[in-house]
Amino acid sequence: MTKKPIYFNHDGGVDDLVSLFLLLKMDNVELTGVSVIPADCYLEPAVFASRKIIDRFGNGGLDVSESNSRGKNPFPKDWRMHAFYVDALPILNESGEIRTPVAEKPAHLHMIDAIRNRDEKTTLLFTGPLTDLARALDIAPDIEEKIEKLIWMGGTFREAGNVAEPEHDGTAEWNVFWDPEAAGRVWETDIEIDLVALESTNQVPLTLDVRERWAKERSHIGVDFLGQCYAMVPPLVHFSTNSTYYLWDVLTTATIGKKDLVKVETINSTVITDGPSQGRTVETADGRPVNVVYDVDRDAFFDYMTELARRV
Ligand code: AGV
Ligand code: CA
Image 1 (spheres, rainbow, N blue to C red):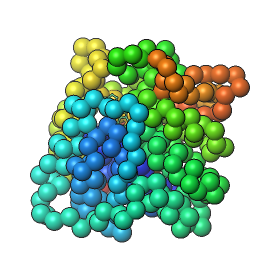
Image 2: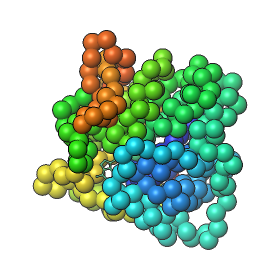
Image 3: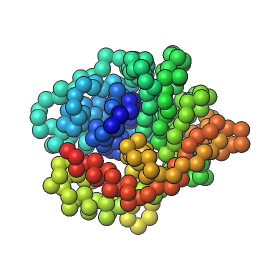
């Protein structure tokens, strides 16, 4: 099977770290680089956890780059703490050593090198804000033509986003809201964008039946790892709240391994970068096109991620 070169930039949430694990198990993916941005996480535990996941579930050959990017609107502290819990899991600490090194260069420069060093075009997978990509494009505009496409978890075209913060109208999704200008910068390019938005992930909340399934299969080390990770975050039981967890980033990542899990439509859109709606993505007739997931085969998705986890 021909492997796609993928560069992965994430922000250390539970589903970002699970995404890293699953990428390492996909047979059509060659990870060319991993970097971590301290948006929905604290940097140190998220980088530790990433290095340990690569050690435990990968085949070596990677380093992990730390981003030095800063956002405009900080994530809630409770959510940022999740990386500490994953980093502390016994399965990631059994060996007592970390072999995967920290990269010398910060994320945006690390990504520029990874893209330039390949003859083929690189597919970018971003499951946090786009700050490192925006900075990389400013410094090295030549990389644009070496980017196959950007696959991003971000945005929503519905009225209701998932930001509940003072002075905001609630229409934004967090990965855009953290750094609206970065999304605006990427929107200016001709890079093809595949978007998993909130309307795409509404069909894949973390529910109790999913947890029970992972519990039943916990004799598989990889499935147990999924169960342990998703024990840290609140499921959807009675109704969706601001802290209910969806499989946002994992769905985004799964589309790389199996694109027929989702249906996609093209929407022309604009990013609002200022004011009470900052971080909102809106459909506009003359906006830039993005390919948005609007339907998911929910059962096939959970089967696929569990099957990948069984490969450990
Ligand atoms: O908006 C979804 C993004 C995804 O990249 N993140 C979490 C995923 O990694 C922010 C977020 C929104 N609601 C959250 C989030 C919640 N309840 N807990 C943690 N993070
Ligand atoms: Ca994320």
